[in-house]
Length: 124
Image (tube, rainbow, N blue to C red; front, top):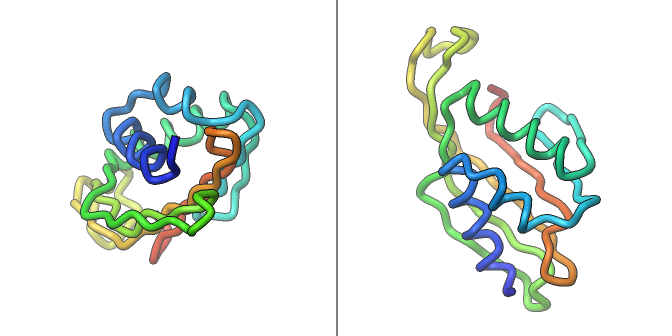
């Protein structure tokens, strides 16, 4: 499966909170790098980390452009992450909406994603 299709399916699964579909895209030993520097390895850890992060911020990815290298092994989604501050820890105040620039970098091997790195313009 081309990396652009893998990225599209991953973004769709994240936005729909369909973690079973997301897991099907990843290698069993895949790596997730989070904006705060946290690194997790393995499907269960990736699922748990992403679900907690997205649910905590009611976050969705939007307005993205997908790019891929010529070999089809790496790709990036440059867009926004939209959500709300449920914990009141940002300058938006509790429940305040936000939209931040973000980049998701994907790596693929043998039709499975092996790495996902999430970069934000600021920490949530």
